[in-house]
Image (cartoon, rainbow, N blue to C red; front, side, top):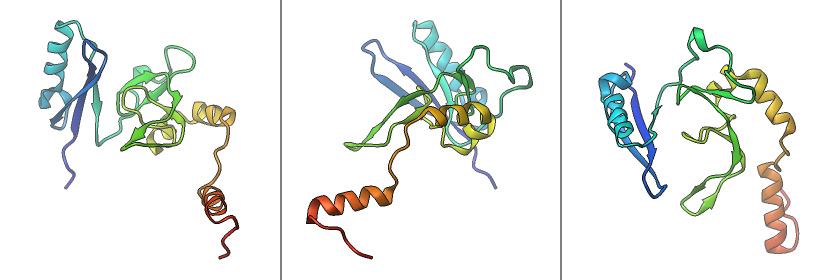
Length: 151
């Protein structure tokens, strides 16, 4: 049996800090996320409803992006401009990647790749390749001991 979906409502408060509220339910309407988002809109804020567990294909009437440079975000259910930035988790900065600015999913996600095949390949072609984990470990081992570890 599949777990029911969860929905995030993400918005920025008057100070500019990102806020989040979680709703459980199969659709955003039945979970209450849409109603909460409308209340935020009435207060002059710009909320986004994001799926937490399931990815969704673009609707048949929105198969083509409305503007160039946009990718379909299967979790936000919108065409978004993915930006190149890194995120910080518990004081550790992750690698820089093209990410959705709202839900921070990367272009490495299988569903993002599935629904945006051509654009993802184009973005990765222009991106600087990061060193592999093996190369990073070798560099770290050399820096701490002064010589390379043999395996």
